[in-house]
Length: 282
Image 1 (cartoon, rainbow, N blue to C red):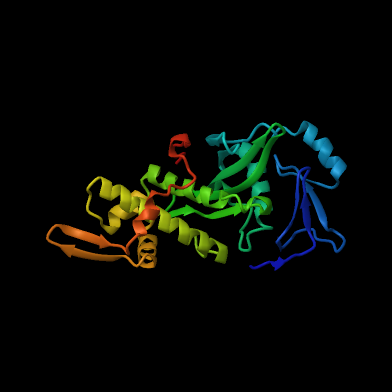
Image 2 (image 1 turned 30 degrees about the horizontal axis):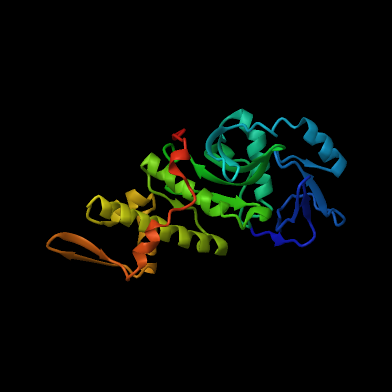
């Protein structure tokens, strides 16, 4: 069910404020209710700035997250945690993430099925503690019949021009390569999602082509899927948008790309694979 857009409801923290984009069903929305005060660490909502300041003095989440750190970038001062939605200790936090996401993802679903998901969360870090930036969720693909590399992805408005959304998507595909399970984002994609994934698919498929050519391996749809971590359907879409042409000669299958296209393959994404420390939780 689509939710109505808002222009008068603001989330305020100690450090920034931003407008909420959607109001979900069941939200306590009085006509004079225009502000909510939120802790950037634990995502608790409070009724006043004074209450928020008092809470922040004792919030246990400022320097602790109920999950496993899987990535750290010291230069840009951010970290990524994976939170297991099946653990009881994680439930309050994952529900707060989902509640917040409902105000920024038009089709965000229920709060009650989070045990089916791993929640991968990105935080900026400073001397004050963790600051929630955004997340993506992914189903436990080895325990259910699912080929989604991620279910939903969200970055809060103050951080949307920093490349964090694309970075989270890159991590989701790298996880798929580690698992050995190519995947695809859950549909339908939003207009913004289509734009981001179109760029990510181009970068991933060009890097896969470059890597396979370096190893002297003939290019096939299946191999491009495994190398990129992308579902075959998305590989086909990416190749079509690149104006790629497959043909076969006596040496096997060959792929022709427009002149200059492969120059983009050498432009690595923001993810430093050596800094990703992750194994599938199954």
